[in-house]
Structures are given as structure tokens and as C-alpha cells.
Amino acid sequence: MGLLEKINCPADLKKLKPGDFPALAEEIRELIIEVVSKTGGHLSSNLGVVELTIALHYLFDAPKDKIVWDTSNQTYTHKLLTGRRNEFPTLRQYGGLSGFAKREESVYDVFNAGHAGTGMSAAVGIAEARDLRGEDYKVICVVGDGALTAGMSYEGLNHAGASKKDLLVILNDNEMSISKNVGALSSYLNRIITGQFVTRLKAEAKSILRAIPKIGASVIKAVERVEESAKGLIAPGILFEELGFRYVGPIDGHNITHLLETLENVKKLKGPILVHVITKKGLGYEPAETDSVFFHSAPPFIRETGEPRKRSSIPSYTTVFSNTLIKLAKEDKRIVGITAAMCDGTGLGKFAKEFPDRYYDVGIAEQHAVTFAAGLAVQGLKPVVGIYSTFLQRAYDQVLHDVCVQNLPVVLCIDRGGLVAEDGTTHHGVFDYAYLRHIPNMTVMAPKDENELQHMIKTAIDHPGPIAVRYPRGSGVGVPLAKVIQPIPIGQGDLLLEGDELAIIAVGYPVHQALKAAAILEEEAGIRVSVVNARFVKPLDRSLICRVAQRSKYLITAEEHALQGGFGSAVLECLADEDIRPLAIRRIGIPDQFIDQGPQDLLRQKHGITVGRIVAEAKDLLASGERKVRRRTTTASVR
Image 1 (cartoon, helix red, strand yellow):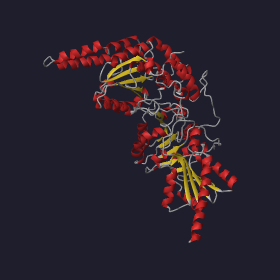
Image 2 (cartoon, rainbow, N blue to C red):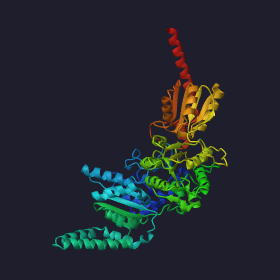
Image 3 (tube, helix red, strand yellow):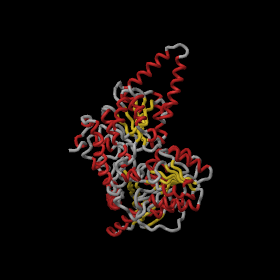
Image 4 (cartoon, helix red, strand yellow):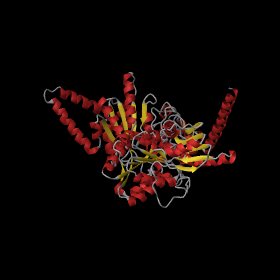
């Protein structure tokens, strides 16, 4: 039996000797690599925090002590040490373990988090609640260096430092170039300065100096300035000290002995403390060490080579966006690309190589990305912000105030619109129509396929005001790409099929599902269906929608978006404004609930974004309409 098999909770971990931990870390890495190669997931970051997670669970008393994981995509070792080893092969699968911390999953998961930058604020809130309730436990927040590009992290740090709460922050740093400070000397100094003897000596010395009339306070300040200057020579902790934290570090996050000794000392201290830990992404798996960006959130891969298990010959929407933007940028030097720490995910990596001087990665700072784009637009450039739908939510105020109020030509290219599969609840992009379409001056488009996407990118670049193009994750539908890219008239939908009894008005991914459903309905029931590709969520093609609705007894709207406030709601508003009342209307979309993780096709099947659902709704709609007509006829004859 291996060491990991003996651990069903942190109490079992405490039964091991620290000398066993390197072997345990190796077992954990092997299991993580094996499972993630099959399920996909955040490999690089998880391989980098194995020793750190072991040290935290060995020294602290979870779940009494609260460990908050910022972003929480680095919690795989945490899950393995807290009773979820047997379920680990279900990671990110439908009905299985989440790829993030999830309170519903385990008492050891303190706070759900899928977006970076939330951990500090949550941890400060938990520490405040502890003190208000008169309880006694440690609060530890593990935050990555990438999250320190998020402004909210500094808001939390500032609050914690000012309030002097007893809070331990672990800065997991796997990017900053400060490796020269990692080693025996730095680790020794940190163990010394966090030890009880030195801490007590400093406190007693200050007490004696304060008792000296007139000069005591000034001597203390002078000593502190010298101490800070000395620290600046060996450690980059001045920023955190200024925010009110006692800074410790940097230390080697893979040296379990140094971790345990330093954290053991820190555990005895009170107040806000930040321990700076240096780790290496992908440690223990060479492909991940070499390409930590790809393996940050990797698809299933062949373990021996690191190559993806599946490759599609059909280009993804992300690829089509990237190629189109590059093509247009060669013709228009005003075009610049902006991303918020999602260079390859949004497809802007290729753009960066082609136009390095016209590409900006602003870090995990979506709010800044949007207002930065507004600043560029004020000066005549054409900024294109490549961003996931779920992350654009964080910049709502900036879209409204800084872009739309000024009617600036900022292009929002919204990737991962709709259901995005295994990353689950926090990453599905099913709210963007609703939070964008009500903002004045905003235009919102969604293509039915990859060819229409390239035309919409051109439309967006040419548009003189705020505009968003929203497209799904994954491969296109396999249609040919036009060689000449043409803009689409703003607000113009497309009547794809013309019928006389039932109309399906769809936008985005469901348009092709509507076409297939129409073919089945005509073949099976002889029903000729009108199919409208709306293309625009705002402005709607009111003329086309009203004309089709007036001619049809029954109407179905279809979208891969939340029903509340979405595209179907916009169509209903349009018909109400024009006093058009079809006999019956049905809306197909995402129900009023948060959606868990699972394969994209399975989630679409479960929530009815399918051909079969459209066909079933259409048949039921017609059948119920006939029943209503019969009831009316019967009632009239009785009268």
C-alpha cells in the first residue's frame, strides 16, 4: 500500500513523518498526471503546489482552521488529502468532483472560487466573522502571483493590513524572477526572523526604547528604517510591509523541510502575515514544465508525449477569430489586441507574434482591460478585447460607464459564450446577452457558424460604437470560410427558411439546430417552418421578426443563454411593443439555475439546446394549439 492510500483525511497525514513527504509528493504527482491526462484540467499549477499543500494540512487543523484557495483551480492535492482520493478519477466529469473548491462537495472547501482575485476578500471576511463570534482558529489564504494583477486582491490586502486581523496569506509565486533569493541563506534568515526568540527580543527591545524619554520613539523609527532597507536587499517584501503585513520570504516551495520549519514558526505569530513561496509550474512532468501555459488548463492528453488526445480538422471559433483579426489588422494599423491574462485561450497569441507592438496582456484585470481599451479608442485606435464571457462579467461597470456612455468604438470579442463544459458553474457564459443588451449604444451579435463569425468581426471593426461579438467554445460546424470578408448591415437578420405555420427564431449556436429541426418537422409531419437567424441580439431585426410572427400561428425562440433577460425575452418585448400575438410561444434556453460541469454535448442535451428539444416543443406547441382551437369551437357551438 502506498502512502497516499493511507490518507483519508488530514488527521491521517499527521500520522506520517516529515521524512515520508517527498515520497508522498511523488505519489500525488503521479496520480494527478494520470487522471488529468484522461479528464483534462489545470495540470501545471497543481503540480506546483503539492509540497505546499502537504505542509499546510500537516501543520494546520482543517476544517477548524480555514484554508481559502484563491481561484481554487490548484486544489487537486487538497482534494486528495481531504477524503476525495477514491472519487478523484471523476474530476471535472458530469456528476463528479469539481475542478475547483466547492463547499457543497466537502467541509474542507471553505469558499467556492473560479475567478482569480476573490480569495483575499473572502479570507478577511472569514477572519472578521471569527473575531465577531469570539472563536479561535487560523485563516489561511493561498493566492497565486497572477491574482496579484487583480485589483480586488489589493483591496483585500489593504483591508487585512489596516484591520490587523490574524490572517496568514501564502503567496504562491511561480512566475516572478526572484529565484536568486531562494536558497539556504534566505530560508535560514526567514526561519530565524520568524522564530519566537527573535520576535520576543524585538518586542522587548521596542518596549525598553519607548520608555526612554524624548529619544526612544525616534530610535525605534530609525531602527525600523534600517531593518526595512536590509530587508529590501534580500527580499521583495516592502510592498506587503507597507500594506500592514509582516513579510516572510521568499522560500523554496518544494523544500518540505524549509516549508515546515518556516510555517511552524509563522503559525505561532499573530496579525496579518504574508509568506512568499516560490514554486515551479508543472514540476514532475516535463511537458508541463516546458509548456506550462498549455498545461495550465489542458485538454485530455497522451501521457507519454503530452500531445492532445483529440484533434479536430474543423477550426475552432477561437482560431477563426484569431485568423480573421490578423487578416484585418494587416489592412488596418489602428487595430490593437487586448487580453486579460488569457493570451492563448482567446486566440490572441498568434496576433501577439504578428503584431507585438499592438498587443497588450494586462493580467487578471478585466476592468482595467475594458477601460484601457476605452482610452485607446478615445485616441482613434480600434481596440479589440478578447475575453471569456464569464470574465467580462467582472467589467460590467466599465463597459457601461467607460465605453457605452461615451459611445466609443471598443470591440468585445466574447469567447466561451454558452455552455463551456468541464470548468463548470463559474465558467459557463450564459448571462452576457442579458447584461449587455440593455445598455444604450451597445450592439450585440452572435454568429450561427464560423464563416459568419469572420464577417461579424469585420462588422465590429467597421462599427463606430461599442459592439460585442459572442461565440461558443469549441470547433465550428464545418462550413467553408469565405475568402472575402464582408460586413453585415447592423441589425439585419437572415430568413433561412420560409414557412406559414410555425416560426423558429434563433441566434448563435442553436440556428443550425433549428434548421435540422425544421427538416425533421417537414419530413415527419409535413410542417413547413420559417427559420430566422437573428444574428443580432441588439438591435433586433424588428421588421423581419414581426413579419414572420404575423404570418405564423406558433413561435419558438432558441438561444444558448439564460432565459431570463436573454434573446427570447428581447423577442417577446418586440412583439409586445408591436402588439403582435401569435397563438402560442415557447422559449428554449438555459433554465434559471447554475449549471454544473460536464461534456458540452451532454450539457446541451440535458438542458434542451438540441434538435430533439426543438422538434418536441414544436409538436407539442402545435398539438396544444389544436386543442385550444377545438375548445374554442366547442364553446362557440354550445353558446
